[in-house]
Length: 123
Image (cartoon, rainbow, N blue to C red; front, top):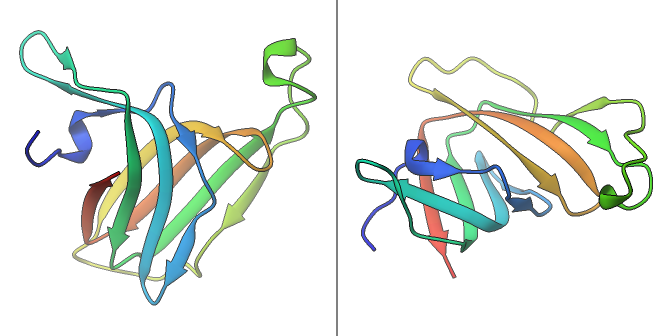
């Protein structure tokens, strides 16, 4: 499939697992991820694997937990923020924004990561 750039990814149906932090690296399990390429964009998914961010200076999740089953239409609990790392300045970092369904607790999450490098490791 070749290397997939972050900007080629469609997170609209993605399932996001719990983040793992090792040093200044952040790894997020992901499933139901789509890669869109070409003109018009062609779907190459769904994909599963890990979002790997190296040199992380910010990892902020805006979390909105579902009330009951997400398909029930009961809405959301009060939103809250999770900072996975203590924010710090990084001149050579890029901002990565993505959204999806967090698996545990079941929630809609909008995630902001500032990191030097992004890689997608596929299963």
